[in-house]
Image (cartoon, rainbow, N blue to C red):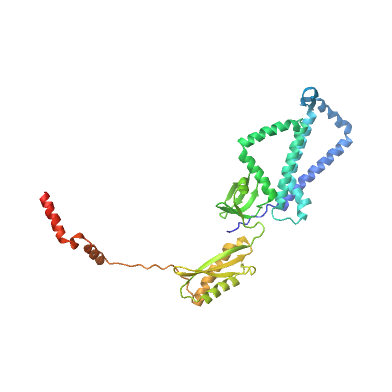
Length: 359
C-alpha cells in the first residue's frame, strides 16, 4: 500500500487573511450600525412603521386558547438579516477559528476539520430555527412538518438520510480522518474530504473516488494510519536446495540491517518457513515507520538481497520442470505397434473375408 500525500485541508495565509478581513468588516459594520442607531435614533425610529405593515398572522393553539400573532414587514426584514448573518458566519467560520483558537491548540490530525464542520452544522441549524421563529413558525407547528419529513425519509430518502447521519458519526467518532490511508472493499486511497453525504478518497492512480458515508459505518474498513503508522512487510525469498542456510540467514539479516527505512524496534525477523518444490522458502519480516515507505522498502530490500546473493555465491532458486522429448520416428514406431493390423493380421483377413461375403 502506498500513501498519496494528502494533507489536512488547512487554509493558507491568504485565505485566512481574507476571511479575517471579511469578519472584521462585518464587525465594523455592526459597530457602525450601533453608533448610527445611537446618533440617529429619532430618525431611525421613523422606519418603525414597517412593524405596522402586517403581511400575515400566525395562529398558535386551538379553540378558545387560540392566539394570533401578526407577522409584519419588519419581522421579515429581521429574518432576512439573520439569514444573511448566518450565511456569512458559516462561510468565514474556518478563518475565525484558525485565528482565535485552532492555531493555538495542538490538535490531532483531522481534529480542526471536524470541529469546524460540526460547528458549521450547529450554526446553520440555529440560524434556520431563529429565522423560522421570526416568521412565526414555532416548534409546535414544525413538529408536524418534521414528522412528515421523517416518514418521507423513511421511504424515499432513507439512503440520503443514512449517509447524512453516518457523516456525523464519522466526524464525532473519527474512524477516518483527513490524510488517512484506508482500504474499504477493493478500494484503497487517502481521505481528502469528508462531506455531508459522501467522503472523497484519492487512490494511488490520483483518481478521486466518492464513497457514501454509510459504507464507512456498515462495511469492514482498514485504516492503515488511524493510531499508528507502523506497518509490517514480508519479503519471501526461495533459496536453491543445497544452499548454506547460515549464509542465507546472514544475507537477509544484512539486507534488513543496512536499510534505513527498516525499524530496529520491533526488530526484523528471519524465518525458514518450508521446503518448497524447488526452493528453501525463507521470510524476512520487517517493520517500517510510515505507510509511504512500504513500496520503497520492498524495492530496496529485494535489490539488496539479489546483490548480496550474487556476491556470496548463494543461488536464488526458480521452479524447475523436467521435459521429455520424443522424435518423429519414435512416434511412428509406437503408432505401428499399437495398430490392430500389427497385433492380429489374421483377424484383419477374417474381417476382409466377412466383408466380401456380405457383399
